[in-house]
Image 1 (cartoon, rainbow, N blue to C red):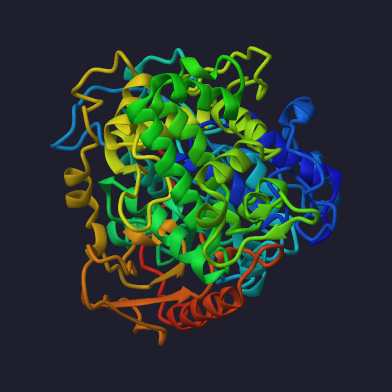
Image 2: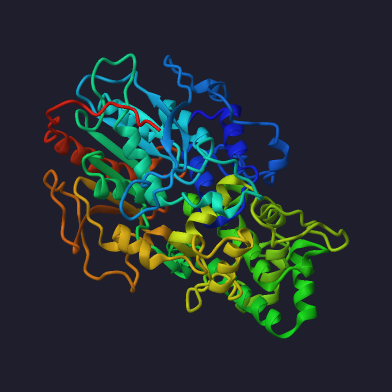
Length: 590
């Protein structure tokens, strides 16, 4: 893609201040990868993309605040944020919800209608667990945006939607001091109802046609958590959403997601990094033994990796720091410039003791040089300390003789990370703990209990009636259907080595439903499949939402996957029939 300084500024402003790996930061990496950018903002195809470590501090003055931010992408149609007034509690008058009135808030969205022709679909791209502003202009205006291409292909209207409690769509300001009670209405159920209310009153002043779902087909497009929402919207609001594209949708809620790292292990073998995976495993197990048996040596190990002051951190939070080497996997695979796994593996697999450095063979260096050699190489990786500081919002010095403010146990301050922590800690789980066993890649101290503690660290005073001790995943799966969900007019896609595929209907893990057959011939309009069938496609040698990108780190199967969806959508749209009677078209009134 044609990258510009303003695009890099937009993406880096989006990244600044991130915290938890659990989706908020991953969402930001996904946007940057879709833009054709490395995590440091450099173009993926730039030969010098990994010459310097990421320094978010250098970009603190760059803010994504207006359409002018992406000046090189400007289109004839001026796109500005719009707002719709919605109830904080969508279910206040239903039989199974409290009847108290909670007030309203304004939900933000963006619209591009210049391609519209009468009778065409309305497409809604859901950003999910992030500030939607950096996404909006890219998705709607950039020629490399899959979503823009889709909207143009069908002469439709494109909407980018911001999720409640993210960006500028929150009923309350969100920071580290926001009371837990203020998050009571941050649930997936409430956020789906928001879209339903919005769609039923949507109109454009410059279009003299009814655009509500009773008169025009609405198509929901999302990747990751928004892909879950795409499937749920079609399943729960079929009169509102006519068709859905669900890319990389982990619809099965699960407290334990230690298996997140199993596809990473398998992908590293496939991509030729088996030596690196075996050395990482050997180093992690070695460090676990040190932390088990010798507290003085463990303290020195933390200082070696993160500098003086790091020794005060617990073994579990040190394990969090070690896990940051995998933060770019789902968005970039082994790529990602200086922050990517390729650069890390190239570093630790070098034998530097001879006159000329040599690269390790298939078995890695732990077997030939000793595990301590690998540990020392890891600790000396030039980008490790900076990445930890950026991802975990801390200030470790990385030097043995300089004391840093190296606190790995801080509460998240990034608003999106705070909101997503509430969501996964109450409803979805997704605790990415250690995958103990033959594919182990992270420390055993990254335990389920530690992941639970992160939840309660963030919301220490939260009442148990709204913030359970453990995520209530059983209820979540009862409400939404989990692996068994099969809404009609819905296409599912996954990457072969996407860690989130493990909880999707296309999961190949041993604990997932057995015998699910994927097929690519579009089902008939409005026809659901059995639980043993899935209209979908697994993209070979790909990770998370790879069919939503057209530049940068791509996979050939991404084009194929998009083709399956558009072929199906073309077929399904022929069946759409506007409903008789008066259109919806009336704004919700408080």
